[in-house]
Length: 270
Image (cartoon, helix red, strand yellow):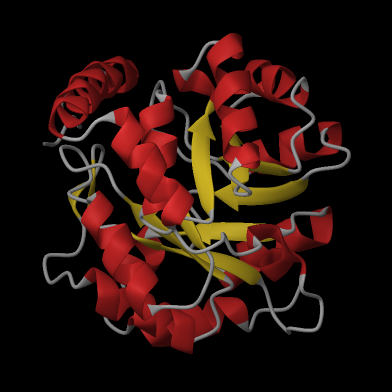
């Protein structure tokens, strides 16, 4: 479903409303107790942060994203094989793989995460609109090593609760912010992994200056810049400013040769 024609600021509430219904339906099909059991039986989580911090590896630390579509852009990559794409990422220098598991708006699925986990050894990020503990246990059961928490989508109490649960499961929590107000809320959690999304949720406008503007307020967290990262010059500039890693999806998904585009970005120097 493409919401580009609708008021951009309405898309997050619409998605969250749909997501609550989706989670409720999942709980009817498979109980929370059973999902917790599956999570407990999963192989231990990989160290997501260690791969991003590995200074022995040259080039930029990139979390390469497996994404078929988005609410703002619609279908991005018609020919879509998530396992093959993740394998290409692993073979061409990605430090980790982000997997979209939202179905209605991104045409992803938890099954994509599960299949990629069986085929690729890199750490995996479950990227979804997480608003319930059920989704965290589901992600861990499917093999996720990290999970995304969007500050704009969660009240402070639930944000803290879900962050704590992710850490209890020995996963990394990527806390994502879009502006100063959200950053202030996120910093109260003392995060060790912070994502700065360059997309304005109200207009869909992308500006990497967002990362540069917010970065000085972040002291101890490993910072990941997200959205609008297509040029090696931009990655170099952000890296010089102190950004540790980059989450890149659309630039790779639109590339005729995914591997070549990833090597170009990884090989850039800051």
